[in-house]
Length: 381
Image (tube, rainbow, N blue to C red; front, side, top):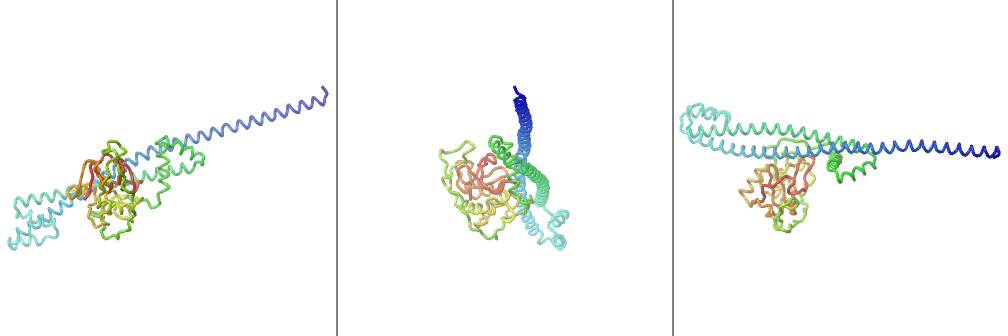
């Protein structure tokens, strides 16, 4: 081999060596990049699963809190009604008994600065019968019960407000995490979420956070009657047609009754409820400019057709039972009927579906008749 040929061979060997080193270095750099992508994806998924598990629990806690508050609200309304009736009866009895009681007793009655003062003056003047003394004691007991229920309500509202803050923080964390991911990673996580409930809940938290506004609804204590009958009636938006159930009574979680009939009063009220689709859940509210709770959207919707309905699910159930058609057979529910649960109420729209206000983070909309547990019954006036 000539010297020239030897040089050519050495040059080719050197080139191959350089190419091999370069290719090896490229492969070394490529491997960590792929590993980092997989690692980041796994880390993001784990974080979203943790956020999702917390989000699901918070939603459940809020639903429980809303139901508890609805029950307390019903107890307060019932106690207030009893108290007003008892006070009226007692006042009339005192007026009748002491009309001819002489100047001194008249001074006792007329000198009272309030109803409580009147009760104390009459009672401690020893000028009451045993029946009246018992009536006075009943009124005082009712007042004590009312004050206790109201104090409990305030505590429950404070606890609910704390849960609302935790939900908002959860959504903020989920948003920040999802926003930090590449589009490719988001797509992969979204695909995985179809088979992963906790991951899906985490992604939902981020989505809910994006959908919420800076003016998030706050939990506010209810007024004794938040229904405003003077609210101008909006033009109702037609809702879905009744969906008939086939196969009779349902025993599973996908059905829930026959909608072969239609409640005319309930259907009319439901048309107004449809106009508030997407409105936020606000405890104690029944005002389109603020929001609604479950019984608030019912009482407001009925007010739009000139029908009074009390503002608590338990009071509404009792009202229907006393003044209309009520059944515990879910297969007999009609389109537009009210469906009652412990601490919850919604409209029945057929096909095993209900429509109403749910809880914080899930405003007015549709859901399964079993989303709130097993119904107590339903019907309409």
